[in-house]
Image (cartoon, rainbow, N blue to C red; front, side, top):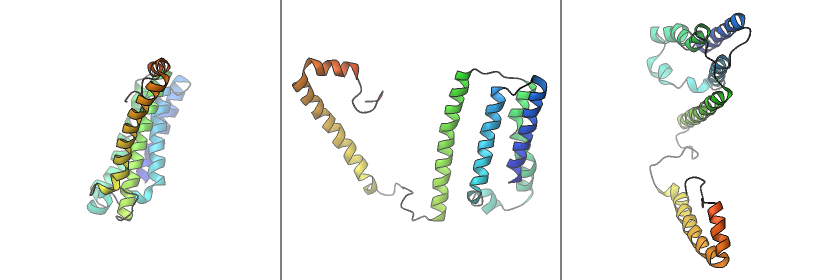
Amino acid sequence: MCNVTLQCLINLCFLMKEIELRGSPSLSMILVCGFQALYVTDALWHEEAILTTMDIVHDGFGFMLAFGDLCWVPFTYSLQAYFLVSHPQEISTVVAVVIILIDALGYIIFRGSNSQKNAFRRNPSNPSVAGVSHILPYFYVIYFTGLLIHREARDEHQCLKKYGLAWQEYCRRVPYRIFPYIY
């Protein structure tokens, strides 16, 4: 794991260089270093899962893994921070928030899929890892989706009959029946 630790140290050096040159780190630099530190922390926290990756299991230790971990990863993964020192990029708070939201979504997908993959490797019979080998486990989702959509249609009819114009006004103000902006 020295590769990702070295990556963080190199990023920290670039962050310090930016502070030396400009007096404070840019929001861009903070985001780059912060996101990469999150990735590194995740890798260290879930180190057990890394031992099951193709690099370790199938390729084994050799030049490619040694060079990749000690040279390629730390120096190429820190190129974004290097770029920001050489070419300052200012971003607005709104842009930063959008970037943070996109990164958070990506991280949730990344962590969720990797955790599920590792759980399956440890115990392929684990019932919490859903497969699609049969439709039966999805019966309730399919059944209740149809049931609730049908119920909503019946409720719509009953409310219109009972409340009349007040219901129409309500539906005008609340146009979505179950899922906002979808249905």
